[in-house]
Length: 260
Ligand SMILES: [Zn+2]
Ligand SMILES: [Zn+2]
Image 1 (cartoon, rainbow, N blue to C red):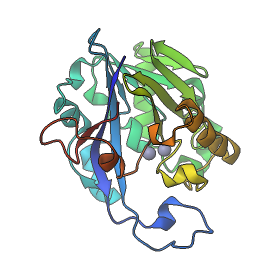
Image 2: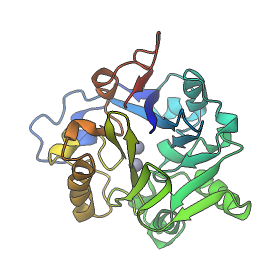
Image 3: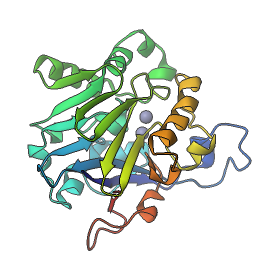
Image 4: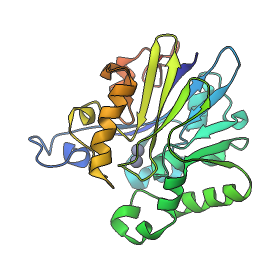
């Protein structure tokens, strides 16, 4: 069984609902903060650690209007995980806020869907609208890691570690992965960007969409993978995650929460 954590590294309190929901939305110009997370699973029995996503580098935060809190590596250190010795990192997809911080994991292999690398390096990136959430240097750096045997490709669902199932959802990005992780309190589903907010799961999709059918089917699947209990689905960018779940330890309120 695994212990699962959500770790916030940045946020943006200047966002509005129109940034996060499609029309028609009846309150499009009201405030709607967004948080930026990485996640970690630790197996106390075996000592295994799997990190989900790598964030983006701090120097990019000002231009994005984001408030920087701490590097994902600093956040992991708060719960005793040394980023430099982590062996496995799942990249849920290659958007800048998920796949821009992999240099902090020099010992890791990066798990990625075939479809995501194909998407981020192919014809679709000729369209400015589709390439907007990607940063070329992040993608090309990861291509270099393929040649160093540091990328593990998956094609569809996979269970690389007992009790951690990677779910090929797509929709928001071609190879978007979520994950279902077994814990002592039952399965926890890390949605990543298959559901940015709790409200996303109530039929209100995020505006970055490659395939709306897959986005909407993905919402249903996340809830099904959580045994029908939407409270066990952890949205990828919702500040409320830090309130819904208990702090991972003393002094960690608003920083790191224990999901299961
Ligand atoms: Zn994304
Ligand atoms: Zn994101």
